[in-house]
Amino acid sequence: MNEDITIHSLYNLNETIAAEIFEGCTFPWEVLPKIGDFIVALGNTLSEDEYEKKGDCIWIAKSAEVFESAYINGPCIIGKEAQVRHCAFIRGNAIVGEGAVVGNSTELKNVILFNKVQVPHYNYVGDSILGYKAHMGAGSITSNVKSDKKPIVIKGADAPIETGLKKIGAFLGDEVEIGCGSVLNPGTIIGKQSNIYPLSSVRGFVQAGSIYKKQGEIVKKLD
Image (tube, rainbow, N blue to C red; front, side, top):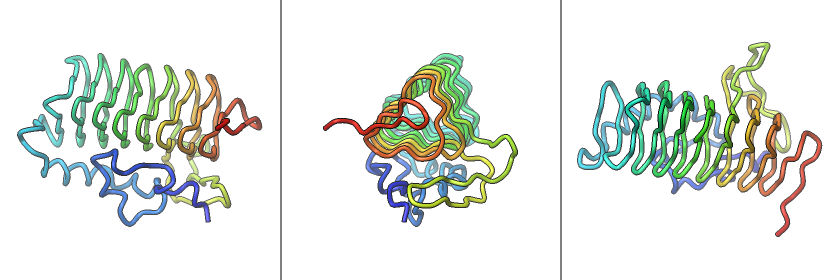
C-alpha cells in the first residue's frame, strides 16, 4: 500500500551521506525527528582531512564554498563542493549534500538535501527531504505547518496516512523541478523526475514522471 510514496520509490540512497538514517523507515516523514541526533553522531565520524568542525556541531567540508555572510547554526553538515551563498540562513538540523547549492536568502531547517540539490534563490525549506538533483525555482517554498496547527495527514497514492507530526514540509524525489514562486503545502510528496509549473499551489501526491500544470491538471511526461 502506498508504495509510490516510500523512501525506496522516491530516493537513490547512494546520493546522500545520510543513507543510514533511512534504515528501518518506510516513509520519508519517519526520518524527520531523527535528523538532529543523526547529524551529531555522523559528524563525529567524519574525516578531519576532509571536514572541519566549526562551532557547536557544525561540520563543513574543506572543499565547500561558504560565503562569510551566510549564517549556519548546528547541528549541520555541509558536504563536499557544496556552495552556501550570500546571506543563506541555516537554522540547524540540516544536511547539505555534495555539490548542493544553498542560495541568497534561502532558509533551511530540519532538512536533508541529497547531492546536487539546488535551492538557489529566496527559498524556504523546512522539515523536508529533497532528492538527488532536485531543484526549487526562485521564491518557491515548503509550507510545513497547517493553518489549524493540527497533525498532518499524508494524502498517499492509495490511502491517507496519519503522521502524528505537526510540522512536515515536502518530500521531493530525485530530479524534481519546482517552478518559480510555487508553494508546496504541508505533506506534499512529488515523485521522481516530475515538473511543477511556476506559481503552483501543490498538495497531496504527484506521481513520478508527471507535469503538474495546476490543481486537477496533471499529465504524464511523454517517453
